[in-house]
Image (cartoon, rainbow, N blue to C red; front, side, top):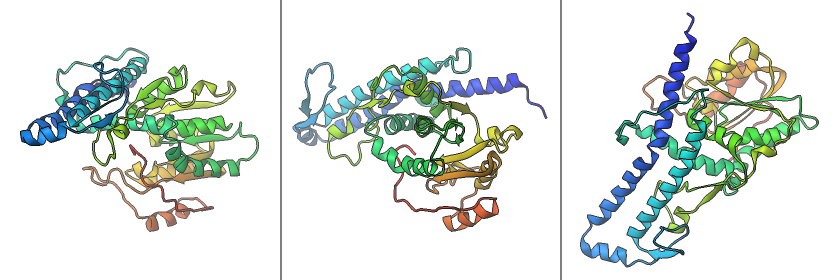
Length: 357
């Protein structure tokens, strides 16, 4: 059955507007959550409030307008500083959203709801994840975490394509904010990054196409949780992005982004044997049916091509209402051969889950 292209576009635009609504609601949503901490503080016995108010913990720059230097204070002042960082995050998010409102070719407006109740908790969490992943993928502070996940993939690909890489077509599904794909393009590969989620496409589009200088923006990715911190200084720490200017990519580099479902986009006949390598990072466990992912990867690779994968088996849809397939590693590995792959190298890396994954 043919699908009306205009209907598909309307649905896409509606989804895009829903995503932007989540971005626009970030400020009010997070301030309300932080205000709950304030209410909890004020509900304590006065004697306890007095003890907490007597604390003199360091509160780093940037500080509230009432102060001109790093200060000290108790829990109440720390909650106020979290409000300040939330507002600063919201300013960056508004810049990103404004730049990307023309993403579909015509301006997409978000209906005003007047309340954050219309924004799902899941969408709010996705916005927080975006802020954390901006810090991980596009800051100097995130380099150690990036290297742990990306370097094994980069080394495996460079070992198999050690010489001229200009003609090596490399596909990166589930590209997220596209840092791995960008780094591979900088190494000379002809790269296409694929991403389904607008929550990832919007900020990656902004970083890749609107960055004018290194450290242009500052985000505060750690203020959404107050658990397991040694100090407010760490919790309120700024992170500057980007740490590298995407425009430094050589003019003759081949680097593109493809939006859409990996299966829908790359199961098409034109993608058959069109790629020399596929690199997947923290991607395979996003499948409801991982066998279908493997089928499509096999479909895209030319004879003798390579699939390099890194990631856990933290199946994203395990507790979802819709049916999904979850496999153990022991069950998964034999399927590689059954699905047409030859397992050339296998390593176990103790990485843990990246922030925001």
